[in-house]
Image (cartoon, rainbow, N blue to C red; front, top):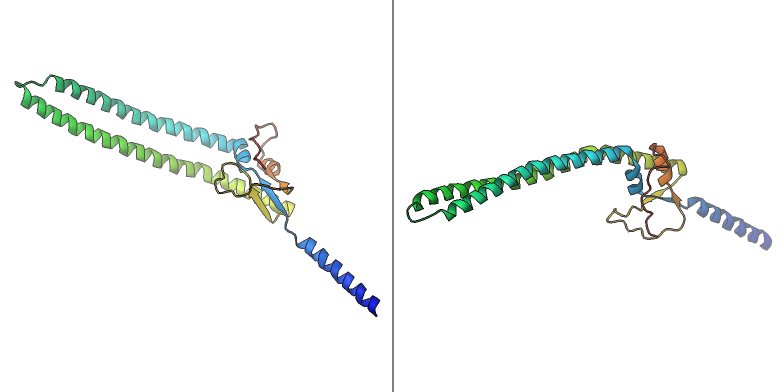
Length: 192
């Protein structure tokens, strides 16, 4: 009888251990920076964003040059001020000061608008790409039976994963799923 109870406890222990082993969650990691850096759509979106930024900056630079030109003209006008032309020059300087303030406000408004436009365009360009990458990560995680996937990209700000031992690195599989070839440049590996 005692032997039967021991066998029962051993069998129960083995069953419990087997259930614990099956219940373990598989964990994987991905470097989203590497995926994005090698995704053609991401490169195209970045180029589009850079071109828009250059266009906006060129528009602002034109206004800045106009401001500098008007300021220089006002300073030159001030040097010609004398007792004889005091009233006329003062009126012209007051008009110039008003124009300079208006132009300065327009420059500030243009800079704010440019930042807003760039932010909007960035969202328009990168949201679909981020969705595509997220879908690929989810698909690979499901294929590999992973319960969790950590993003080990350096630029992830709040990423608190500082060490991992093992786990499945699914970066390559995600890149393959997205059609990124192995010959594309590779981002530096994150520090363990």
